[in-house]
Image (tube, helix red, strand yellow):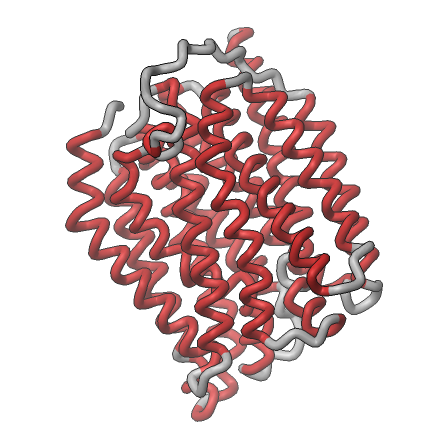
Length: 403
């Protein structure tokens, strides 16, 4: 292996490790925050959805500006600042005693999350050689998926044995280790290009316009993910599954990891649009099936538990195909000096969908249809996203791609 190959490999491993620790801290708290709000602040489900969505709204707000900053200035200092700030806010959760303080802290956390994830995604694109970008992004996402596999399960286990505050401090400690690892990454020095003639408020400074069609399709697939990520534990209890709910995320991660290991290679070999189409189809069908479990529970309750966890695997397979393919799609639509803007647009689309899903899930959960209706609505939006990608976004990408 050449010295250059050894260098990028070492940096890539460090980036994956930092990404794992970042998302492990995130996923550790993800399934317990709805329980925390309902237990400590007696918040109804509709309010819980709105409160948790402020995190995503804040991340959404900062993403376009983060892309611009990362394309304008050196990336590593911004990356480290965002990582450290994001980590320290975990400790703040332990100190809040009233709901409005939690909401403010959650919004600030969303801002830092939007910045650090945009920065980390851009840093790893800088590190990877172009001919292995799809494969590399797939493996980079595996670190996230491993965190998804063990983070929620760990959080749901620990919350039954320790106070919520202990979990907040644990997340902060894990994040601080991630900061140390991130500091060891050698990021290529960015060549600062002269400021162009567009006015500062010009929207195409902060948005990859060519990525809008794909962004809308990704957004529509993020909506059911937003419902699932925050309400799957509650839905599982409604289905009579009283233990082991954290294993849903582990099963989902199995599907994600299994497909990511080969999806990136298929993307690098020119099968990008086909990979997305298959992933969209699997995701849509899985969420429709998940929404139907409530009806099936009334006639065949014994089938619910195995189907519940099997669908988690298929949801993971669908997203395991979508993530590296969509990520590569956005990067391939952008010139090299706008990689961060491409990553920002990709993640912004995802955040909008997550925020809509959180709010939609909470609102529909309070109706007669309950969470089953929430998942059905999310599956419907994913189906619309599949049709739009096949008819609009895929031809647009083929026409406008730069590499």
